[in-house]
Length: 103
Image 1 (spheres, helix red, strand yellow):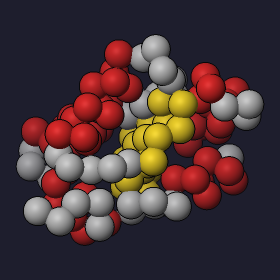
Image 2: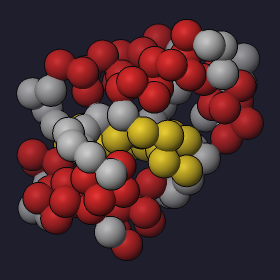
Image 3: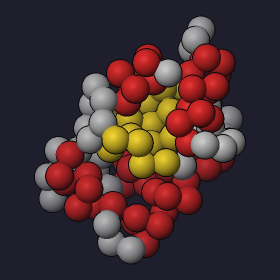
């Protein structure tokens, strides 16, 4: 868990993902379209991916563990949380506050 929290706070926006997950792809694409350059950790390509996935499930309080998004070092959550923030107009201000975008 310590590794996940450390990685989640090393950049303004961080996405834990798996390369074959369609929802992960959608969140990465959304961030790219918003002008965000997040750190992306593909759990299926990392030797410690299973450990990180277990930590993310624990942090999220449920599965699935990906995508898991951190903004400004804080766990935002998965797709539903990110999309709720985006649709309510709160995602971009959070990203600005964290220094992930400068619109």
